[in-house]
Length: 102
Image 1 (cartoon, helix red, strand yellow):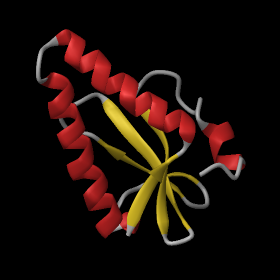
Image 2: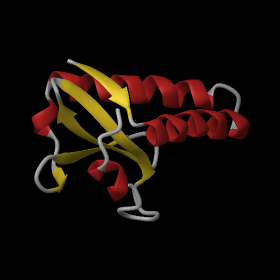
Image 3: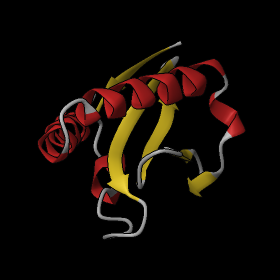
Image 4: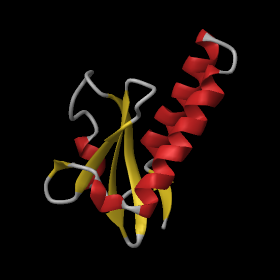
């Protein structure tokens, strides 16, 4: 299974890379690699992670960074709805789940 970003989640992901790289050279690349490893696990077994919102929105926390990937399975594809800080602004991404954005 493959994945795709909601447009706003793609922006969040790129902003995280830039943020971490600005903090320390190479940290943005470490974040990106950790994200890719995590999302590959999601693509292999999407149902193994806990449901964040019924009926089908799930979350997986990045272990090395204070971020959570919010996703759902749609049309045999993982749709990343948000790359969110795990404690800040809970649920801000909910509007993304109601729209049919890819």
